[in-house]
Amino acid sequence: MPINVLVVDDSAFMRRAITKMLESEPDLRVVATARTGEEAVTKVQQLNPDIVTMDVEMPGMGGLEAVRHIVAHHRVPIIMCSALTKEGADTTFRALELGAVDFIAKPDAAYTNITEVARDLVAKVRIFAQRAHPLAAHETIERRPPGPSAPAAAPPPHRPAAHGSFECVAIGTSTGGPVALSHVVPRLAPSFPTPILIVQHMPLGFTRPLAERLNAQSRIRVAEAVEGGVLEAGAALVVPSGRQIRLERSLGEVVIRLVADDGHSLHVPSVDVMTAAVADAYGPMALGVILTGMGQDGVVGLRHLKDRGGYVVGQDEASCVVYGMPRAAAVAGLVDRVAPLDEIAPILNGLTGGTGT
Image (cartoon, rainbow, N blue to C red):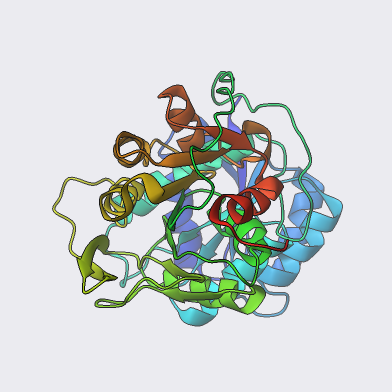
């Protein structure tokens, strides 16, 4: 059975481009297109598609209102197609909070790798069309059975930390990450005593709006990492898209170096690169966290972190949008403690000596 997709965009060119990307795959079929949010709502009701791709900005009922209405009445997953602008990013993150499952960067002149966009879109359509509707940012965790994308992995035994006060937290995530981060970072104690580094796979231009949104929601400071910045207690830094992070110790401080990728990483930034850098800088006082995401980025870096004596917390399968990265780390024997998403912030507070909830 093919996966039936509704493509929503006010641009005829973009509707054709997205349709061509999807229908180049034998298992995907565009059953209809829509030009407005109102038309999208009607066609979802009439056609009951398996998944919807939704433009962010449209005349009349925009993508945000269309998502709000569709999520309230249907369980169809919605992937946002966002322009590479701050306004597009802000609206996209709001749509994710309302219940859209993920987003892609809209292919245009500013985004030259059309093949990469198409590959990303196809992969996400296949994954989300087969899953129960994921979690929105304002919802609580609902325990759900594993999806059909991979066989269930037995959770590793809970291994207690050798000590109770880590000095740096490294968080890696991908698909489903913006919503997952909104369940973790805003729930960290205002007295959180250690620096945090975050790698979230996303297109260029989206990491700063993500950091700003998390900062507005949180009791600790959240910002996009900058070259030459210093890791500070109680501050979370999001590694910018398009750069890899290195860490240097200098005069008792840990300094950030943002560098071009050397061509060896599938993702830029990479969870592998970031967690390995934290392991080298903090050794056994490094705490790794691996959250929802496709693929296995993080396995190499977390293995290095474990070899240096660090500790790893992984999100559990039932609360992941995509149990890919956490599963790969667990299967490799790198995860010391598995927890539902809503328990991760309290665990981090406890492992770092933070107080409060």
